[in-house]
Amino acid sequence: MKKIKRIGIITAGGDSPGLNAAIRGVGKAALGSYGMEIVGFRDGFRGLAEDLRMRLDKRALAGILTIGGTILGTGRDKPHKMDVEGERRDMTNVIARNYKKHKLDALVCIGGGGTHKNALQLVQKGLNIITLPKTIDNDIAMTDASIGFDTALGIATDAVDRLHSTAHSHHRIVVAEIMGHRAGWLALGAGIAGGADVILIPEIPYDVKAVAAAIRRRSRLGTNFSIVAVAEGAMSKHDAAEFAAAERRKARAKNKRDRQRAKAELSVLYARHSGNTLRLAKQLEELTRLEARVTILGYVQRGGTPSAGDRLLATRLGTMCVELINEKVFGVMVAARGDGAKPVPISEVAGKLKQVPPDHSWIESARRVGTCLGY
Ligand code: F6P
Image (cartoon, rainbow, N blue to C red; front, side, top):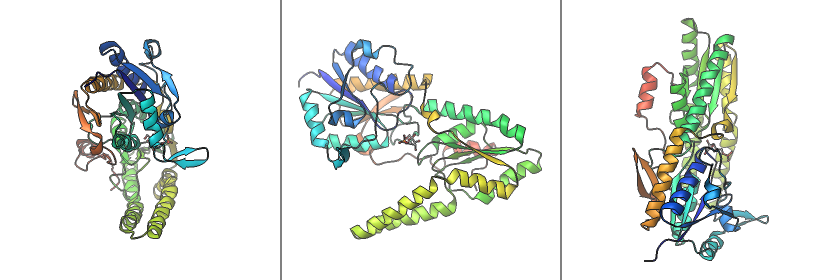
């Protein structure tokens, strides 16, 4: 079989610290160790569809290890449903044509859950795809870790640390909303590391009365402040039951009309849920008679310099990726396994969500130090 000469690379989905370290890891190994050429495409899958290229020579790769974001740009476009000139189009054939036009032997897609679903579509079109896991949410299946999580964990922990002194000084409840989409890794990790008094995650629907009782108990024992670390996807038992019922209706829908109705119902629930943290703070204020304030950490968690852990992970996975390309191993994600890396089929990653298992050691540890987990 012919030697691998030219590879393409994109970053897709939400940005995260460590993407540039991954681009550098892939690029330096490809250019230096294997004599391959590397072509960057801008803004995720859109760059492939619109042929927006970026030269990735030694010079372009120099000095990017420590820089946040991605020099390639990113986007949430889907190859099969892309908005082009005001219309939604399937661009997978255009992407396949551009892949051939540039004589690519492989394409590296660095991304999270959505990127893996999109990458699978291109695998099915016959393209040689290899992916790297990145997301601050840490929710990608089949990998121990994903690029960006370690940095975001540090940022969120620092925020929880800092909120302690102001909550303590004012005898307030401070509710800190932490990202993570539908997984609680970031809120749980930062909550434990930052010593939050209450941690609420999507995997454990909460009872607001139990949370208020835990806060009142602290007050009775003389501590008139509390830090509540709440994952953006956390929900009350009542809301979780409503979501589950709507999901069941969607799964059972027998025709298009019923499916659309169930989808519309879910959209209403998601829209209502977006104000959940503010509502939670209000409820806690009423139930405890303590003042409550909200801090939404938001995009701060995705920005800035990657941690040493993320630089290391990105370099490990990025360089291993080129080794696999050189061996012509395609259709796989380079998963982190302990200190090593292992290729796993993209088909086993796409469409799956890695949530915090109920018996995870972090949950046990939080319980053992007396943290309220919402029940
Ligand atoms: O997946 C990373 C993430 O930051 C999630 O934690 C969050 O729910 C989402 O992206 C926000 O997406 P966007 O950048 O599209 O607003």
